[in-house]
Figure (cartoon, rainbow over the protein chains, first blue to last red):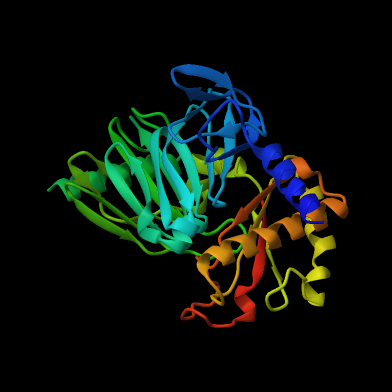
Length: 147
Length: 211
C-alpha cells in the first residue's frame, strides 16, 4: 500500500517534469492565432498551445497574431497583434515565502489578469513598460507601448 | 507643464480616434514613440474593478476606476483620463480576446489527521472533471495543506499524502495523469491563520486549480 502510493507520486511527478530544462516552467501557452512566437536564448520558436513558458522568455506576435498564457499562479497574460512582452521574473513558491513576478511590456497591446501572487503579496508583482512601473491590487490591466 | 503636455497628447489622440481620423498618427496608436498607455479594466469574468498605481521619475498616478487610463513617457506622467468602451475595444479587443479561460479553483477538506476526504468534498470530484474536460489543454495543480497541529516537517509529508490521495482519486475518476502536478505546501499556507498547534478543519485541505 505504502509502496503503491510512493510509486504514484513518482509517476505523477515524472509526468509533469520537463527534462530538457532544469528550470521549472512559469506557465504555458494557452491560446494562439496567426503568427506567435517564443524567443528563448536568442532562438525564435513558433508558439503552440500547451508549450511551456519559462522566466526570461520573450513572447511575440506577428501582424496577424495573438497569444495567451496562463502562469502557474493563475496569472493570465495576452498579446494583441505586433506585440511583445518578456516574463522577466517568476517565482511562485508560497511554502517557502518565495513570491515574485516581473513582466516587461516591450511593444504593442497586452492584457494582464492578476493571479495568486497578486493576492498573496501585491507588492511582489511589478508590471513594467519602457517608461513606467505599474503596481496592481488584484486586477485587470491593459497596456499599450509604442517603443 | 509636462503633465499638461501629455494630457493634451492623450486628449488629442483620443479625440482623433473617436472621430475615426488618425491625423498624422495611425488610428490604432494613440501613443507617440516612447510612450505607454496603461488602463485599468474590469475583471473579465466577475466585472470587479481593482486598483493600479503607475509611477516613474516624473510622478505617479492612481487608476481607481473602470477604464481609467494614463499615458506615460520617460519624462512624463500624464493626467488620468477615462477611455470609452469603444476605445478599449479598438485598442485592446484582440489582446483581450486572446486571454486564456479563467483558472478555476476547488477546495477539498479532510477529516482530522487523516487523508480521508469529507463527504461533501467527495461530491466535488465530478464537477472538477467536467471543468477539466471543457479545456483544450488542461493543467491540474493539486496542492496539499494541513493545519498547524504537529511539526511542520510532518505536515509537509501529510500535505503531500493528501495531494497524492486526491491525485489518485482524480485519475481513478478518469483524469489524464499527465495533466496533474502534485504539490505540498504543508502548514505554510494556512487558509485560516492560526497559532501553532491549533486544530482547524478549514486548513486541512487540498486545493485544486484547473488552468
